[in-house]
Amino acid sequence: MSVAVPLQRRVNAAIFFLVLVITTGLVSRCEADKAPVVPMVELSVTASAYNSLHGQGAGSDHALAAWGDRLAPGMQAIAVSRDLIRMGLTHNTEVTVEGLPGVWVVKDKMHRRWKRKIDIYMGEDLQAAREWGRRKVKIRFPRPPEKP
Image (cartoon, rainbow, N blue to C red):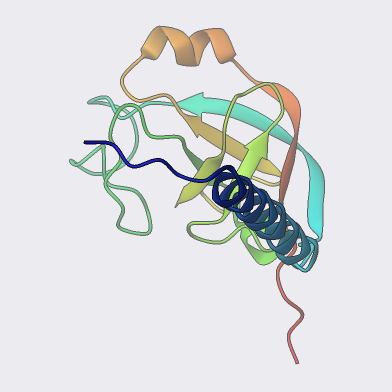
């Protein structure tokens, strides 16, 4: 059994749906325009690569990072020199690295002797780390908030 719906009712429903879609789009666009713009820092650093293989690094647990994080192959993690930590590249800061896809996260820190340097975690892929070598790259990360 079907019920005939008058043409005017179908037109009204279509107009209501169209107005609803347009209003929703405008509201979401206005909210996106209000999103705060996060100022970014761009630095040129030396980037090398490292692995979590036996015989690399200090200690017996080669997957344990300096802040206590456990590194696992496939993670997009980096280690940073201590001077970069003072510049705002602290634990769990998200970083983009020139020449590498995606967002990398600060999970490890390096020895005090290194300056303006990052190490890119390559899991257990020794060949990938060797192919990366050492090179100058630009990194970008959010500017830390000003201290009062």
